[in-house]
Length: 331
View (tube, rainbow, N blue to C red):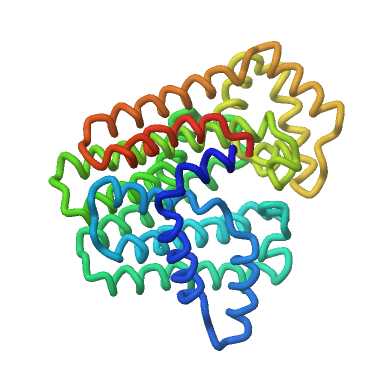
């Protein structure tokens, strides 16, 4: 991802993003040593803060004159972080953003409990906001995200997994969270329902594009770019769209390789000859083009939804740019 381009998009909300960091620091503060050490680990490996940035930019665009955008920017980031913490346990991941995961350093039990605590901290902060519509949005998002995780784990290591299941997982685990961020901003601004729906759709499409690019990068980016091993999804038993496409186009050649990778287990690196052959098959059968095309389609749809909403022109230009920036990211 071009951090330079994103930093330009985030410039109008830089002060509020700093306020979100302070709010996160406050929410994660604890006089319990065990909580403090886990929180410190999470804060030391923070991500791009894309979700709170979307809350803040969308709120500014919609005309929300309230400090509550900072509160809910932090709330959505906590929910996102809690999901990552739990995902790392479920996926047996050992790296996140090039740093050891919580579960590797402190074990699964503490990590799961800390993820639960993050969810509850997010909920407690949201309740203090006293906005029932936002609580409904958050409850819906969190519920669907957990459902997505259940569906994904039910499909692990299954060569019969379907596209329908893939897109259902994508929608629940990623897109709905982005949609919640942008819809919440419109709710905070008191926008009418059609505007709230359009802002939700803008976020949903960004989330769809984001996940498609993420799945593409697992097959095209390097370990250094990703901050984790390439082909991690496949090693963890997940069939994302690039591999689903390859399995459709070259099942006889692809299935034996996938089975060998799964039988070896997540802890074993993929054999160089198997990785090389997979990459040859992907190129020969053009297995990545559909994922790229769908990501571009979702990005264009996000722009179309936002174009129908009136708001601060300078911020609108930035929001219209973000889908393309995310589409071109490399990590």
